[in-house]
Structures are given as C-alpha cells and as structure tokens.
Amino acid sequence: MGPPPPSIKALGPPPTGNCPASSAEPTNFPVIEAETLLEDVLKLLEEALEDCRGHTKKQVCDDISRRLALLRDQWVGGKLSVPVKKRMALLVQELSSHQWDAADDIHRSLMVDHVTEVSQWMVGVKRLIAEKRNLSSEEETNEEKSTAIAEENQTIPGVQEAP
Image (cartoon, rainbow, N blue to C red; front, side, top):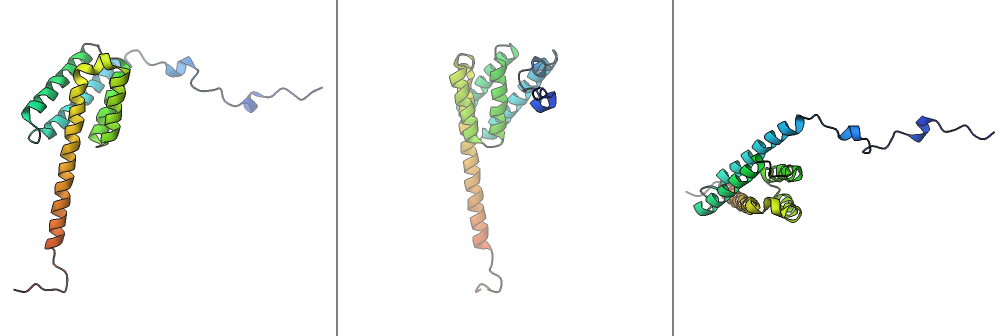
C-alpha cells in the first residue's frame, strides 16, 4: 500500500479572501459609516479652509467653500460611490498629517478614476491642498527665522558683551 492520504493539517488553512462570509457586513453598518465619514471628511476640509483664511485671497476661499458645499450636496444626495468616499477619507487624513504628495496622489487618482463624479468639486479640494501646503511652508520658514534669531540673540556662556 502507498503512503496514507495527507491530513487536513498538512494542507494548511484554507486560502483567505475567497470566503464570501469574510466580506459580509451588517446591513446597517455602511449607512452609519457613510454618515460618520461625511462629517469627518467635511470637518477636516472646512478646518483646513479656516486655517487658510487670512492668508489666502477671499475670492479663492469663497470658491473653495462653494465647491465643498457641492461635495456635501452630492455626498448627502447619494451621488458619490463608496470608493470615492473612502478615497476622500484617506485624502483628508493625508492633508491633516501634512502629507502633501500623498494627498495630491489621491486627488489625481480620483480625477482619473472617477472624473464625472468628482469634477465639480475636486478643483476646490486640489486648491485647498495647495493653499495648505503654501501656508505650512510659510509657517516653517517663519519658525526657522525665529529660531535663527533666537540663536543669534543667545549669549555665549563665559563671554560678556561690552557695554
């Protein structure tokens, strides 16, 4: 007789990702998640816009604000797909973490993959990313200047300035 048949343990666990039960979600979860996602996304975008006010032209801020209102209307109206919502959630996370290149990459992918869905308001999001990046660069420059000035003004121990 030949060798005994391999045991189930020898074959290893079943492959993951092929089981339909693993992707099943409770029916009420996506609705709650979508509402929470909307508020989180818009809150972060509006906070970013507020940060830019006073540093950016009023007309630019008003245009961004109008476009964010379009985003809200389309989201609430059920006109945005789940992939767009999820990518917007990622985009605002990158934006709030000052990961400008990553936010730009997500913006670009949305424009390529979902242009008809996002074209009306994505221009405002792109401009907001650019304005936040500029604002952050200005703040970093100002911090560097103030640090350099502070270092220049420090007295060296053991050395006294002439009167």
